[in-house]
Length: 173
Image (cartoon, rainbow, N blue to C red):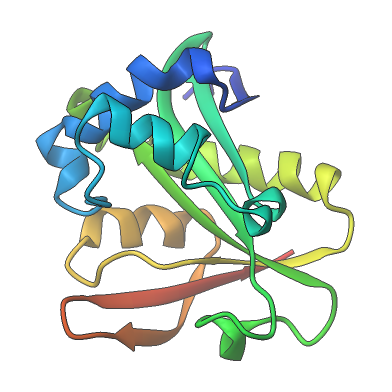
């Protein structure tokens, strides 16, 4: 199988309509429901008034397959005070990763592992001290968990809250 070219473009205000549309789709909302439903809420959360200085450590991207925008990916540094701190690497930096495929037709096609593997290489070049990536799918999201396993992630724990249960997966780089 030929892997299409995968690129990562920094999320920018011109992506607002695209991101807003993706965040409304049922297959996305099932496991990525951050409550930002209106265009204005998405704009404030991802580009504006809800941003804080701590967000400067985060990076968000639109990723493309063969030049076609297909999803959103965001990373965040996992620091010592993070709720994920117990799964940090003892050496180097640990970053968390979240991603979504915008179109339901793109799910189940093998794109997830390819995108994650390409991102790991890309992000390691951007963050040379990176030694571990964490990802936290909902435990019911077996499709995502299987895709992450194909990209080299393995289970290290669970984070259970009153409204959710997340499987914590790690990949050492």
